[in-house]
Image (cartoon, helix red, strand yellow):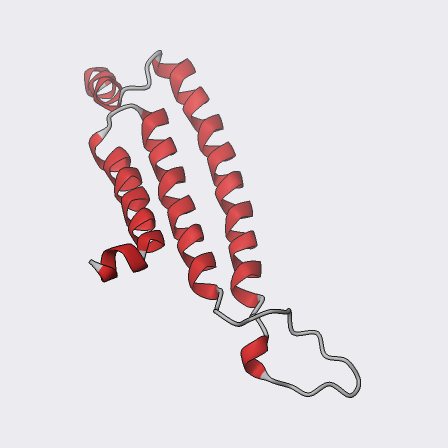
Length: 124
């Protein structure tokens, strides 16, 4: 029981990832698939941010002239910076995918994957 309660944040990430994965695999609507992908990416970003923090890390690694370096006191900013980059990529991917979905809807008149495939089969 201690494992489940003590690591509740990891269980939240797992649930979010499974919700996003389910939406990408099981849903047939393209917008629902896109939202599922976004949930999945958000869960991964939250996971990496949470494992990058450490107990007892109080400050960022800015060193002054006569400072004594104690590595346990410093937080590593690199994972957080990388996740900021991942957020930018996630938002831009979401925007481009929405633009493509709009173009698909204008061409086929639907966002259902099965209907789009049926329309394409009938054209051949």
